[in-house]
Length: 309
Image 1 (cartoon, rainbow, N blue to C red):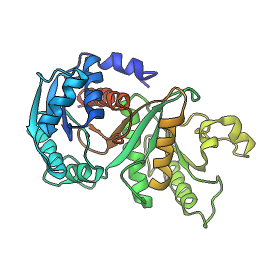
Image 2 (cartoon, rainbow, N blue to C red):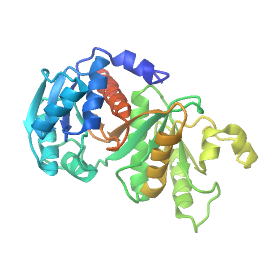
Image 3 (cartoon, rainbow, N blue to C red):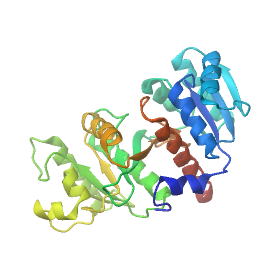
């Protein structure tokens, strides 16, 4: 990993040129997040879309200077998202920041074939990077927002998308745990069957640039000692997991929000993986600080893509 925590991440991207485009910017949390990110020196300009009178009122309350931003009046949430994608295509911004709009509208606009923000045959998935007091490194959780009940092939794409982000962050061969309720394959628990098959794909080269193991429960993934106690011998992932992939939205979303609300020392950033530009997708009720860190993470990934190109 090219940074050890979110404070170092912010230092690495401070002063970079980052133009944001935010649909639904007439939202107190996203305005506060933009204020925090601007205070860190992470934003150079962009477009704020929504009820402009409300945006101005919220900006005044947050003491956010709007001079560097273009304001775009729009009251329809679906149209806000379409306008945001159009701004990206027109070169008015470097990445998207979700404001007070529905995820379904946001994702639909990004997936529009005319927008060309998703490669042919690609799949969008959600990725959250977490820092907590009780785990020794940053780790990812997927998919907590987009794919409701992913198929085996969609799970493979979730892995590919998440691994792509982690590799951009400097983890050459991320360790991926397929999280299930139990660690033994049981046909009555379909997630364990998928986890076993995805592990086989990793071993035989059908999934590249990472190590996928499972089925594992969360204890096994994050603690080598607990894995030993459960009789899980060997493996590269236990106690060293970089990415935890959950079986479906019912499992991943509550874990994501539970970590966000309850975990000591929690810091996080949330993105859409699989798009050609960074796309920020926190929950509408995530803390403004999470949204600000998401802007920092998007900035870092944007620069890494430029280096790779």
